[in-house]
Amino acid sequence: MSFQIHPLPYDDYAPLFALSDDELAAQGARRMTVDASPGTPCRVSLRDADVGERVILINYQHQPEDSPYQASHAIFVREAACEAKIDVGDVPEVIRSRLISIRAFDEEHMMIEADVVDGQRVDRAIETAFENPDVRYIHLHIAKPGCFAARVTRVEH
Image 1 (spheres, one colour):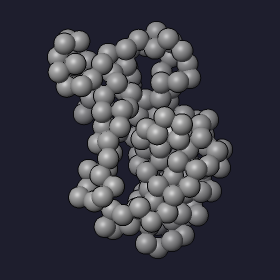
Image 2 (tube, helix red, strand yellow):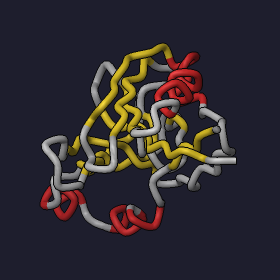
Image 3 (spheres, helix red, strand yellow):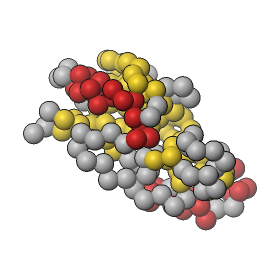
Image 4 (tube, one colour):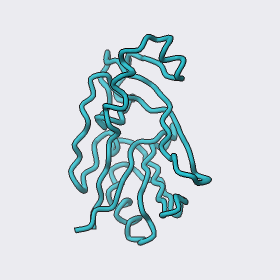
C-alpha cells in the first residue's frame, strides 16, 4: 500500500489574481509580495514562493464535510504556480522541510488518529496511519501555524 499527496487545483485560484486589492479584501483575501523564503508555501505548486513573487493569502475550507471537524484556515497560492505533479509515495520538499501535523479521518469525517512528526519522517507516518483500515484520508498541516498543507489518499496496488 502507498499514498498520494494532492495539491489544490490552480484553476480555483487563477481568477483571484485579476481582482483589485479592494475586491480581494471583500473576499477576505490579500495580495502579498514575498519578502523571505522559505516561509510562504504554495498549496498549488507545493513549493515555497521565492522572494519577490506575488501570492494571494486566502481562507480555504480544507474540511468542508458535515462533521464536528469542519474547518478552514489561511493558505498561500503563488501567482505563477504550476499545479504540482506528485508521484505516488513522494513527499514534496515543502512538506519534508517542516514540522507536520497528521490528521487521519474515517468515512464519517471523524478524526481517528493524529500525530506531529518531523517532515523527514512524514512518509512513514502516513503509511503507518493507513495501516488502520478505518482511515479513509489524511490531512497534513504545517504544525506551527496550523495551516492546511495537503490532502493524502490511500493508493492500493
